Image 1 (cartoon, rainbow, N blue to C red):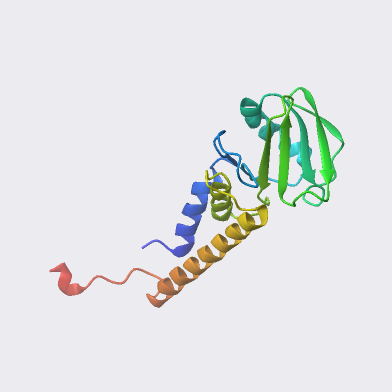
Image 2 (cartoon, helix red, strand yellow; image 1 turned 90 degrees about the vertical axis):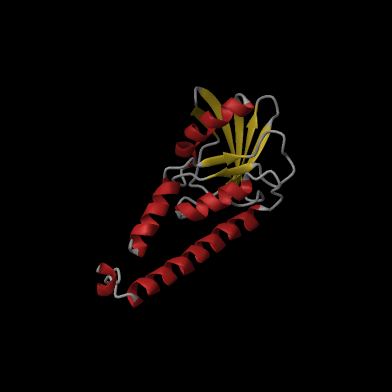
Length: 180
């Protein structure tokens, strides 16, 4: 039998190496967000190069990113990203935990920002929900889903640990009669 901590570590590794961006297919623009992004930290200028490189293939050249001021460390008004000057506009009236990415031709994506310290399983659940074709949830609801997923996983882990301890912390010995 595998210990609960080993099983949890294996499951976390599965999502730890997964993409940190999920975007709904281009045909969908009905929800509050078009997908989700899970940055590794709160330095917007440091995190944007990878994100914008991935989104440029879909949107074309990107010229502006709108973000919530309280979600990120202070950022300049413009930054050189991917060989282009990108305007960075921070506001407090924008929904927290979202960013808007705007292309030169007017195309835009609204993305849920998964907090960097979110555990991999919860981040994956929120990103999958945000990029779902039928998603119409607001950012707060999607982040609540991530928290609920984290709580469900915590209960699952707790139950597994209780089973493990009730079995003496090791696989039950084989029945001597079964050996014969």
